[in-house]
Amino acid sequence: MAQAQDAGVPQAREVAEHAAKPVRLLARIGLVAYGLVYLVVAGLIAQVALGESERADKKGALQEIAETSAGRTLLWVVVAGLAALVLLRLAEALLGHRGLGGQRRARRIAVDVGEAAVYAVLARSAATIAQAEGGDSFSKSVVAKLFDLPGGPFLVGLVGAALIAAGGYAVVHGARRSFLRDLALPARLRRPVTVLGTVGWIALGVAGGTAGLLLATAAVQFDPSAPVGLDAGIRALADQPFGPGLLLLLAGGLAVFAVYCLFDARYRTE
Image (cartoon, rainbow, N blue to C red; front, side, top):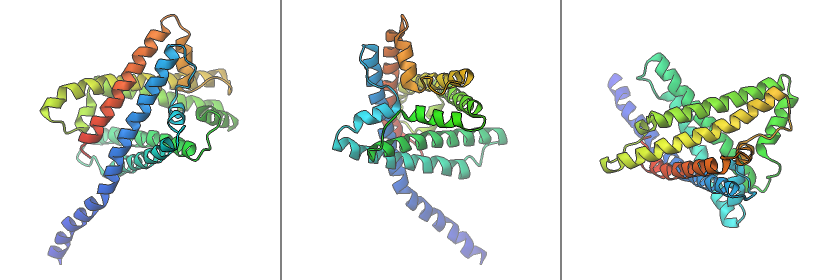
């Protein structure tokens, strides 16, 4: 009896691994799509730096893609890929990191859940626009709803603090090159991908931290109409003396992150 049970364990694992293959394929497509979104974001930020009036947040980038029927089809691919990433991140949080110590495992689980939440929000934005239901700014509508809840300013401030923390994590993730542990890179690519990941993750953290800072400011000022989101931060920075130059640097960094996503999709270990 015990031998039969032992024999069934590898078979069950093989079945689970086979079932996960389509999800992993979708996740890799999602990473490519994620990079595409940030490539468009980088282009919009560069336009703002050069005096154009396009939106510069993620949903604005998705709206840019959705202007054609082919773009709307691509958005559904984005939704599917990001949904697969959500599933994989949650599965890793629930079942992975068993060999780590208590504190290290808790940190990795928190990172997995946080990444799943980011992918889920972006997937929802993509689905909304693909269905032609886009309208007012997604971030502003969410903030207005939060302000209407009991303890609304506290909730908005909490979201802002979470975004600032996530931005800080991305900066540290890039500076410490922690992203390399998720990649199985050939030796010839290790150095260039390390540079791409370091620059890209730091730029991503700066962008996310900017959005969080605006949310925290709106919470402190108790102003539901305050400009929030990455696009508002980009426009505010563009008005500063050295703003356009800094925006071009940020745009370049996010474009680098977009290229890094291609290598992430190809060489990710999970």
